[in-house]
Structures are given as structure tokens and as C-alpha cells.
Amino acid sequence: MKKVVIYTGKLCAHCDWAKELLSKKNVKFIEHNIEKDSSKMEEMLKKSNGVKTVPQIFIGEHHVGGNVELQDLEHKGKLDNLLKN
Image 1 (cartoon, rainbow, N blue to C red):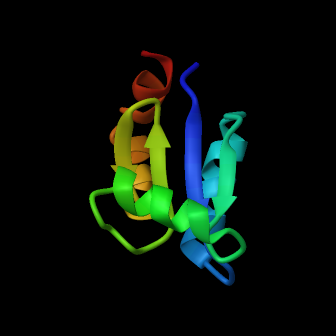
Image 2 (cartoon, rainbow, N blue to C red):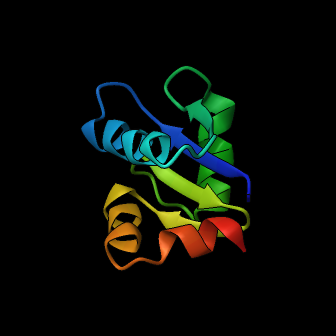
């Protein structure tokens, strides 16, 4: 299974929903709270080409985007494949 990294912030419902989906699928992920660690915000901005909203989700080298994109992949049946390959 690919490495999954999620950048989050505080009081972020979309972050919670994304983490809930990943947890429900038994996907281990690394969470970086950009509010607590400003260096992680810089890292997120570089990796996401300047996207400032949270969550920002990465599966392997693939930039998924946010929770809406993650949920969309799941509903289309494409998330499992992305996690495996």
C-alpha cells in the first residue's frame, strides 16, 4: 500500500471526514497539522503547487486534492486502485 499523507488544520470538518474515510478503509496515514507546525505548511504549499486549503491529501506521489476529491474517488470506485498501485 502506498504512503498516504494528509495535511490538516484545526476545526476542519473536511479534514475529519477525509480521515474518517481513510480509517474506515483501514488505511494508515501520516497527518501533519499545519497550524501546529509552520514548516509543514511550507511543505504542503510546495507539494500542492500553492493550494492553501486543508486537507491536502497525497497518495504516494499523487496529489489527490482535498476531501471532496478523495470522496469522489471513493464513490467512483477508484480510491482502492490508487492506494494499491
